Amino acid sequence: MWTIVTAYKRNRTILPKILDYPTCFTISNRAISQKPSPSPSPTYDVIILGASGFTGKHVIRETLKFLNLPSSPLKNFAIAGRNTSKLSQALQWASGPNPSPEIPILTADTTDPASLRHLASRTKIILNCVGPFRLYGEPVVEACVDSGCDYLDICGEPEFMERMEVKYHDKAVENGSLVVSACGFDSIPAELGWMFNSRQWMPPAIFSKVDAYISLESGKRIVGNLGTYESAVLSVANADILQELRRSRPKKPRPEIPGTIPKGPLVNHLKEVGLWAVKLPSADATVVRRTLSCLAEDSRGLPGVNESTEQIERREAFWSTIKPAHFGIKIASKSLLGVVRFITVGKFIALFGKTDIGRWLLLNFPSVFSLGFFRKKGPTEDEVASASFKMWFVGQGFSDGSSLASQGNRKPDMEIITRVMGPEIGYSTTPIILVQCALMLLKDRRNLPKGGVFPPGIVFGPTDLQDRLQQNGISFDVISKKAVYRNGSSLQF
Image 1 (spheres, rainbow, N blue to C red):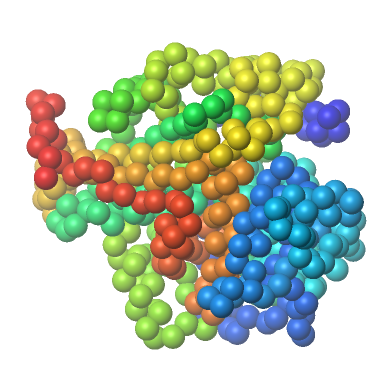
Image 2: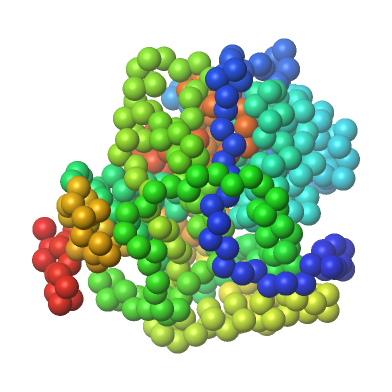
């Protein structure tokens, strides 16, 4: 743990609220050409790296569901990591109660670039489950970009994602490597969720703001993913690096959003669904803003490497229904006491994360400082099976956007609430999403960008990823549509 604690010894500021829209690198027309294969004939469709970890073994189990099915593009895969014995045990666990299938087990280490290049040269896609990504992720990205294979991960760390974009985007475009982070609960539900809400606003109505409320539920005790906790602690240590990175990048046009910038209380009560909520410094808001930045560059989205005319029309039609909005993320509880617990944990991380000894305490005693939300051994299988999430998207806007400009600082008069719902976030929802993203790449690669480092929304938004998620236990629903009057009353329709 001391390695983790001291790795960022000089970075001692806490993570501020950063509202700058990150740059989105786009693809020049000259760069759009047929994607070269990572090698003359990759041996594997997918390699799961870090497959023996808490999340990795669940990714194996999810991947096995789609191996060699008639409707699946996945014909083979391998698992990789440092310890072949642990990998074998993970495969056996993931296969249960059936016998373990003949899945190749490969040795690779993030401290050994040659082993990573060897992996990347043998596969179409690497699914990276090795975190924290700011410590262990870059060598994997570099190997994939150099080899021209595609890369997906479950990262929820803004500094890592934006640093990879700055360092590797141009080469990824050149070599035909598509690098997409945040392909788990961070941040696909947020990305597809705000897009789903946006598509409910029919002209002349337009929306200007959407707040996402995350509610974690369980019939037993809620226990989070330890990697998420470690990433949060290290985000505090890297806050100044993220600020400096953003200041060093060229400014890009921001999306034009109708209405004024919304300001709200620290804690609020969502009466419609009976939840109390507090603002959450999550990667989701950063990832959504990166996608909005891409759309500000080109409202038609990103062209595919070898799109048909029909697919071009489909992509452009999809993005024509997606409008920019101010996006916020909040963590919610059915009781005000639950919100107080969230605030307390956040204060612990912000306070102790400033110093080396503080980070050592946070990382060595997660159960104490998270008030039981996280623990080193992770949740039990029963705790995973009993847990679920609901993510409510409250969109506010204007029933007649065409007259908005002439009416000054008019308040929103319309509200649409949608919901994304699914199983436990770290070990059920995240593997489902990651595997479905991989299947999308295998099935639909010609319609996706040649290469580059992008947020997931701009890549997977116009695909049928949402439909695939709905077929695998993650639902998207419209809850209500209503007019909101100045006196606070409303009319549902």
